[in-house]
Length: 261
Length: 287
Ligand SMILES: Nc1ncnc2c1ncn2[C@@H]1O[C@H](COP(=O)(O)OP(=O)(O)OP(=O)(O)O)[C@@H](O)[C@H]1O
Ligand SMILES: [Mg+2]
Image 1 (tube, rainbow over the protein chains, first blue to last red):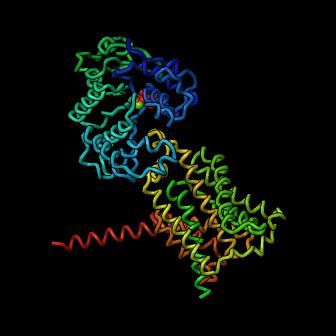
Image 2: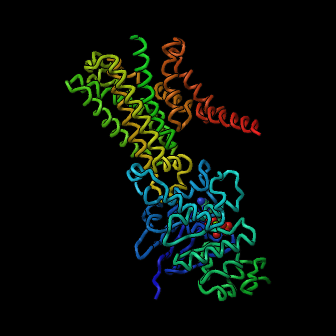
Image 3: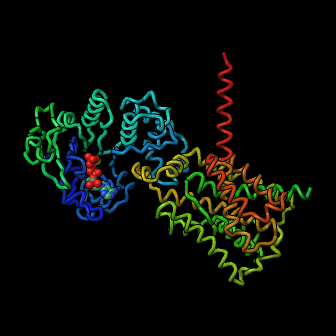
């Protein structure tokens, strides 16, 4: 039996009158690569943000490894083993790509101001950071500033930086957006490798072809509600899921699942 | 000779004071509009101590601790809120400080405290002490910048929300910057009081807070050398040009505005881009 690493129970997030996440429950098992999908505005990003604490739950709970984490601050949750690669990339623009990742890789040395004051050496973190940049395919750009980079590079920087936190549970919000199909395929393979090496991953992605190719299970949100949860093919054949992707322009070629009407 | 000694002592105190704000505003990006209050807290704490018979060195330590502790209290109350809230709170603290001191007879009220005891150091020795303490503050700043703390400060200055998602306890770091910065301001205050032998509430008001902020901005937010140079230059201007002393708020406030508008990198930024374009021309000249 695999035990759930993350357990979201009856989670609700409201923004004023809008219910972005509506009584959603799902679990992520240890070692799993879970796809979190749904149309634009379904509440996927908000659901992950509620897990990391960027937004507050109106009700419900989040457990990591059997411990409630929803009352903790963002940084405390991150230090429990979460990492979020954000949909909207936020590189620190005054630093090089490498320095951005170094900052994340030094999480042990930045655990408190006192530790950060007495630690100067960063050789080990630079090595890790370079390895992370290499892993996502932007190693040669290490010493460039983010300001002049195209979105595809910044998306991978965001991923490398989040990865440098060496999380137990890796939350990826549309890492493939902005990449061309070859880059997307390569990065999807990198994500699979990470998963194979033991990392538990939640992947939000609109590129359904890649999602079906790499994910072991899908959770589908629509209008803030969970409408399906299960093995990819079954989920993609679900009529409610098809209806959610109304218009049928989303075709999952890879799995042979066609949502077109 | 006596004139030069006074001048250098004044410069040293200003450098120390400006570097203390640079840690908060320059390194960590937290704007304080009431930093002079902490100079004042240090000045009053040390003056009252030496007047009560405490040795000068102990009074300096007390000033440092006391200013730092008040700094932490103010920080705890305001740093958990958004960044711009600190500017408002510290401005309030600045006015509060002056208001309280004016009302308290024990603190000398409007008249201030005069007859602050001799430190036991000769004037040149006091100058050397001041310059050494300014140098220590500069060395500490450079060390912090190189340490992991400096990296985290720079990240917080740029984007606090992103730092939190990277696992950084941003409020604690901001509090640390504020504690170190206010404690150093306390030291500068102790030196100030024992240099002039007289202090009054108007020396630590809004104008002084703007003056020190303009030193940090003119020097180049975060640049240790730039801020030290700017502090040294700007601190002696009022002594050389009477008119500046008369219109301090206008001059320093105007300078602050002009730098932010036209050269946000300050002297350090101007210097860096000058070096860059010079290198470019030299490189072009090479075969
Ligand atoms: N900070 C916010 N304040 C107000 N409303 C918000 C906020 N963040 C998201 N929303 C709203 O909540 C709903 C869900 O948004 P969310 O970003 O979670 O969707 P999503 O599934 O990630 O969509 P996409 O696929 O486009 O990224 C949307 O209607 C959005 O406009
Ligand atoms: Mg989203």
